[in-house]
Length: 624
Image (cartoon, rainbow, N blue to C red; front, top):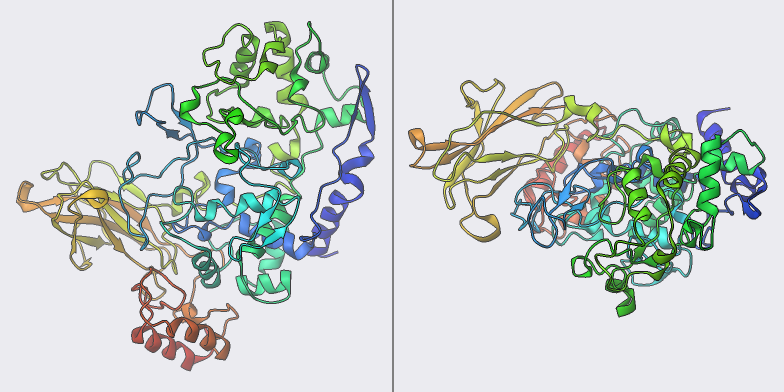
């Protein structure tokens, strides 16, 4: 049996007959509990293997972001219970880090304008922005009617390009996944739209930034790295649309079902699946009434959530009004979605704002929730029934952390397996770094060099930013193959002069676009970049930024050829099909946006220079 057939068989077995209904049903403390119900699948988006694999590829595709370093999988990591293991702080309403309104969020992209040039953010300046809520889990998310902490991803999925209803009910996954790609905090530059995203996918090679690609995905990528072809395999033709992207991502995430925990085995009749302490914790968890913990008032087995929205009084409502921002109903102020508890022991933070860092802190909160009420406005009355004394709290914690742990999730085994994405610590050798103690101070201190994108051959979105320079000054980016000496490089080449922003969101900021085209850079090169800023206050009349070390590498699809940028459909040929695609872009002539599909020389225009570049590639026919 081939790899593709093998994984298809695993997947169909996994999804079939009630998704683990063979585990049976059990009785605990007189309460009936069954395995997870069948996965709900909207008829408008039926499950297919080709769509699942496409969705899995898209989920890990960092090139879908305009920074080239953010994918769905960047913030949703199975070994962290489908949430984000990274530490990042949003300063909250007061804009000050280290105060009680701080939020543990997820880092996204450095802020950029419509042309993808860097600009200052009011809170994060020229550093990655951070979301103002913690990342929720996408595992078992298919069972929720609405998604996100505030439920704004509705069960009815509206095609974002046509405005038509694409899924009438059961489409929360699809509704959710079309939000981050356009978010100027999470994945995109300002005013990014679906046409731009679709063009990005047309011109990149699938998962080129990833390594250690799972076998089921690699089997498909061995046949093609072209997204046009992948969409043809999934949908019958090469059209890439937002609806199809959403349908593929939704299909993949419907396979992320965690139902193989010790509790599931215990329910099936294996009395040794839980330790005695965990059984005590389960009994306490299920207990109700005046002496019970009443945990199941919100966290109902087998999903261990009732998918309602509640206000726990964690923080003042003025910081985040939660569900009210979606419904407009004042009764929903401060309410947030009740999360499921499967694999909760793997999470790095807890609650919508990441307020707690350990399960022990969560247990302590619920242990005192009856007696402590610092934010009573619209606080859910169910909290008055919660009773979790310390001994029971420890037992419940053991049950949650271990009895609800699916080892496949912890160990990232199929279907929770993943490639090594570019931003992973394991890829440090491919990532740009800033060399400490480099630079020369000027009138505004030592300018800072900013690089977020991946230095991969063929990356037309690569750019280098400047922050903290003298406003209005002339600056130029220098490049060298030699490491800095005494804090400065000796440039072997310079880019053209650029003017540092003089005021507003570009004050002290500059951006140099540097498309890493095949033939211009090569794998294995290590380049060093530094900004030189005219500044009379600096020694020698020039302020120097810090130095960035830039290790050039080729993607997992191999080093691209010089003509590959004209191979729009990724079939290894530059032929009439590519000519038609190029002509569509060329007919628009001067398109005022960075890195559009037909912009072969990466100058933000589709013009005669691109026509000449395409003609050279077209005349060679075979792209090798």
